[in-house]
Length: 408
Image 1 (cartoon, rainbow, N blue to C red):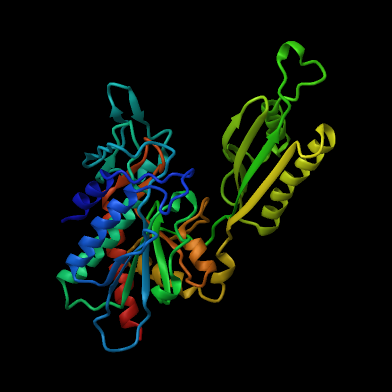
Image 2 (cartoon, rainbow, N blue to C red):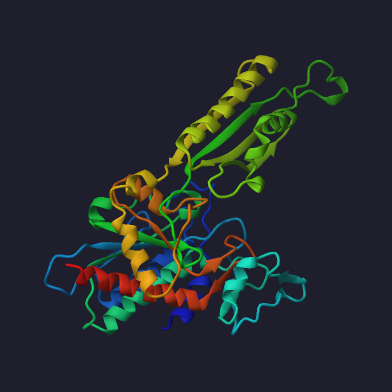
């Protein structure tokens, strides 16, 4: 199976994760893809192939060299974002993209204009996969899975090509922050790893947000509006007051690069009770802690005004910036950088404005920078995948593996 057919097959399998679910993984559909991947890895003849009770797929391709060499993990996630439907995905191929506006859905008049999405410029003259405008594509991160599987297939079909031991890990629920929750780092026993979960293939990322989730509980006092004077305390209005008290410049629509944000993801309110849910992000640990304190300060101020226990804030840290961990281990990044430069690919280091499984795993001892897939505009109908870049990432990984076995 070639890499394009492989990706399309995976993309057509609905694997949306569910942030409201209490099951592990959060949706049964992810286990269906896990089953397919397990079968394919077994067909390749890999060792220790299995899916854990938590839906994590593991496999090992043993080294074919005599000398000691680093054991490397390759990681991608199976779930897609719940921000847009991942059901009935119909990838459409565009060959030799000419740089013009792409009509995704003529009936619904949905188009993708390169003026709005300038990243398309890097894809001129290349082949693309796009959506039909009604779903996301699933390049995040089924392109990563496809890249890893294509690499493994290459080594199986070319047994004379030397390579180190490669540990394959496919995780569920990355999009809802739980991808690395049940990865057994000790069992993986790799020296380090790479997540294949980014966008442009010339970007290497080893910095990410410090991340937390916040839930704000608002207790009101519901009274019939006909007799509400001096009695009604509308929880929904208080929730809006809480939100507007947060720093306006930390709206994600106003931030970029290293700038942090507080992002309102869910508002559910009635007169008696309301809730607000946020994700809190910042690359700076100091500023991250200050943002969390803003939530508590607003809680205290509003409780002083409206009464004790009117507002209750619960904050839970999700993961931390992995940049500090790489200071004495930059060779993990430099090895990829040098390979890319030798291939004539201009390399950029960019902070991840989000998180990957690698952030959690790095903090658990498995240092894991992030590499690109060729996809872009993730989590929505404008998502696309540059096929040429996806294929090129396979070649990058081949050269990285070769450099590992040759640099004794």
